[in-house]
Amino acid sequence: MAKTDWILVGFIKRSKNRQKVLRLLEKPMMPSEVSKEIKVSLTHASKIIRELNKKKLIHCLNEKLKIGRIYQITNLGKKILVK
Figure 1 (spheres, helix red, strand yellow):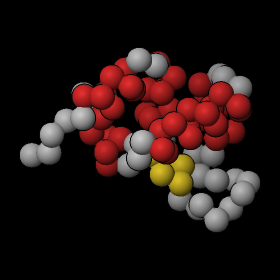
Figure 2 (cartoon, rainbow, N blue to C red):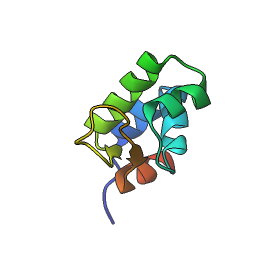
Figure 3 (cartoon, rainbow, N blue to C red):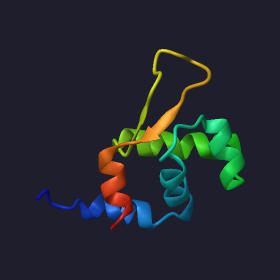
Figure 4 (cartoon, one colour):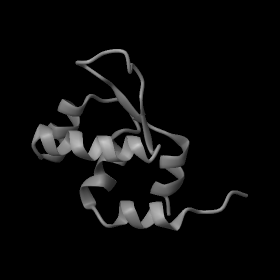
C-alpha cells in the first residue's frame, strides 16, 4: 500500500476551490467550463488548474493545443481527494 502524501492532502484541504476543481475534473473539462461551474474568473480557474497540474493531481489530455486544452483528474488526484 502506498504512503499517503499528507502535504498534498493539506494543500487540497486548504482550498474549497481546489477541492471543487478536483471533483469536477473526474470528467474531462476545459478551464472555461471549470470557471463557469465554480463561479470564479477564468484567470483564477486557470491558476488552480496550473497548480494542480504541477503537482500531478490532474493532467492535460491534449497538451499540443494552445487553446481548448482539456484536463482530467489523475489516479493520484483521486487518492488525495478521498482523504
